[in-house]
Length: 344
Image (cartoon, rainbow, N blue to C red; front, top):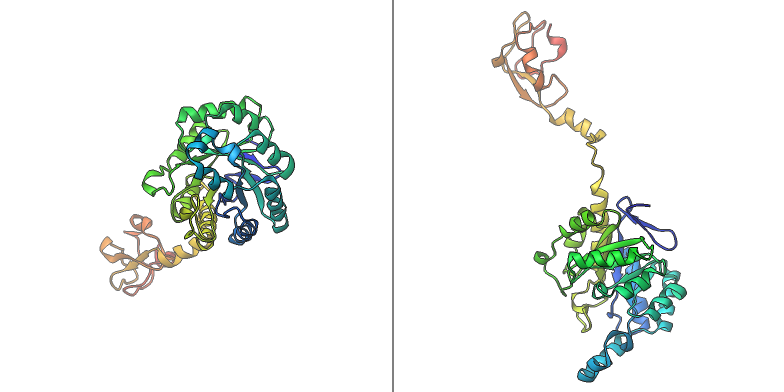
């Protein structure tokens, strides 16, 4: 359906549905399976819909030349990466807990594993791959739903990436606005880019990958049309690690989830609706025509005889001109509402 992302498994993501919240675990698990499982439990408890891992390895992330010049980098990547057996164990644990599992691949083999073995509901494409057209086409050719991040990219690069994905016949896509700075200050986020992406790609849903500290910007993105929010997640952002210091701890992630859902529920309808509760308030809070003096039966009402006070269950102010000049058929004390029964 237009303007919806249909995940494998049947779940739909779109403006008519509650926001889909993805907890990005990145490397905050430090390569430890038990820590990763604790993070999955915590994300589930926070109300997140999905936990997302990274499928990189030393072989798929950097060149041999880079490692030769940066030997510590290879050891670091090796320590924080998860192999296919570990990812499969975590995928099965997610199914047991009842939360979606996904990951970001960096090679064709990692794509194949995620699509064929884990039955991930979608594949996340990292911002760094936006100009890797062969890789985009390979992923899209699998026919799997795609979440495409757009950090570090120009609008022309995003257009080319979307065109590459569409060329495979795959149009099941969510495009994420993203600013690839860690952490990012609110001043550089440009949430209006969500509107730019909606206007540029009207057939696709738009989401937001948040790298700010706190949850205000993420929840605000929902009001701007984001249907999916991705946020880095950790159990303890005091520990060292890739992006761990800017990741969100459970208490704040729970606040983020609640805030996003509250904003979604508050969006409501474009139609102007007068609620039953407001109808009741009108009678209590709006003003009616009230006498400024004792008015005797047989007298005609003057403008000077009338002022406006609560409650609003008498003759309302917009009928003032109709009432002035009419004859009162019964005495009305000063400060009393003028009612239809009082006038001819």
